[in-house]
Length: 292
Image (cartoon, rainbow, N blue to C red; front, side, top):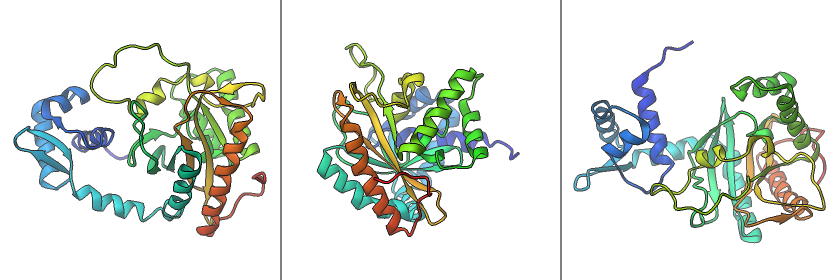
């Protein structure tokens, strides 16, 4: 196992924090408070990142924002994900037709990385931006593992991170089977929170939104045609030439409750877009993927 490098971990934490709040500037004190870092240590990290162009510092406000060097890194990284490039026109078409935002993400090691987004973030909506990351662990990420071998699924289920009951693990496994059977995932929002003044000055980040979800009820397994749902997302896979999931496309930004009969309609439109993106990258679909 590689030795930990605390200074590098802190620098990564700073970049991730600023990436979660694009366009906003933070002072040294604000970053130190938000990340629970020592100010002296943080000062050295901010100086090194600024010198390298990864951060920009406003000398008057003494605040920091992401720097221009990250643009080149991001473009280079995105260039390795041709599936995301080919998916972008399909994502924009989905946004134009359905009035929903569309997000492309990939599973990289044990994380889900946001690669691209179409649509305009809504006021007080979830802050989803390229570069943000989430853990690839239940209940998140079923689209990325639903067509995987049993040992991969077992490792995914082991990522729960805490002693889990047999019933909970069985529910997670049933969610994976449901995604593979119908060809798409459905994530549900929790009940609306009671109205109250927002704490702090930032909209909720993707991580904060996920933490607020009721884990046991996040993944919709059985669709009740007589019900309506508050949808977090509908997701479907784009497959690469090796038959594995290259990227996932996710419809987000659903307003209010959605009648159950609309869910397969949205999913069919999304899956058609994913199939075209799969064809564009010369990918192949697993045999068990149901037809649209």
